[in-house]
Amino acid sequence: MMRSFAALCLTAALALAPGLARAVQPEPAPLSPPVKLTVGYVKVGHLAPLSLVTEDAKKLGLELDMVEFSRYADARTALLAGSLDVAAVAPADLAISLAQGSTNMVGIMGVGGSKKYVIGRKGVKLDSWEDLKSKKVAIGPGSAVWFQFAATVTEKGIPYNSFTPVNIQGGGANYVQALQRGDVDAMISWEPFESLSVMEGHGFFAKNLEYSESKAVGAELGMIAASRKAVDTKRDAVERFVWAYIKAQETLAADPAKFADAYAKLTGIDPKIAADAAKVITLGAVVSPEQLERQAKAFHELGVIQKDMSGEIRKYWDASFVQKAKGQ
Image (tube, rainbow, N blue to C red; front, side, top):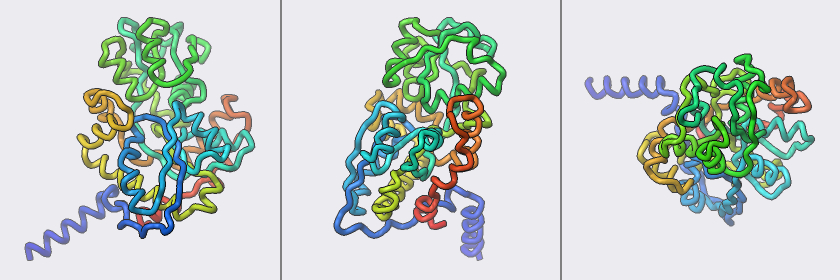
């Protein structure tokens, strides 16, 4: 009876634990002959599962050609040009590509989310959104975090022209240097560069200036997308890549120490910084087609995207890859 009761409790627990109930399915059969996939990525913590994917990919008959980019926008351009089969891109990149007339991107899944705070320069007062006025703020126009920030200040009623946006080109290290030099009062960046600024002592998390909860954008940090050609001609390979990615994602989500180690391995940063930066990230999809529709509509209204593509999003979102990997 005790064993039966324990089994019943376990069954109930699994039913009540959505993360466990949606666990990745058993390993799919390997492809023969192997299939090559060219995958674009950026060195950011929420893509840490990529550091575990390569080994499983080989077992599944995938030959991964990993191509590093410094920005999501560059990976998006390469995907749309047909140079990549799969890429990590920004959540807004699907609407952007559609507005530009390209139908070559297919959204597959989100990768993770986290709370996002404006990073202030030590000594600068940033207790409220009003304090942002007249400040110089380092941004990357069109970047994923910029979309989050721009949506939030709009919803907070803070005029975008009430502060001075300072465009920063290149990777996150350039934001850190601008803050350290005193060129800007605050920065809108991403991990691990946010934690790096704080740990080095010249920056701080402005906890009252959170910009990850806007209705238009939300907390999603990125998205896995594929080219239309890869979806049509390499579907079996893309399915196995998604399976391997979700397996790695679940492994890291269940083990903070392993997540921090994978974070450091992918980004090349100090393990101590990686451990701190990993604490604020929740691995797993946050984005949904509904959120992408809200985002597309909001940024058209703001004039960021020239056409309202909210009605087109679902045509270019394929949830079947994740559903098959999880047996849904």
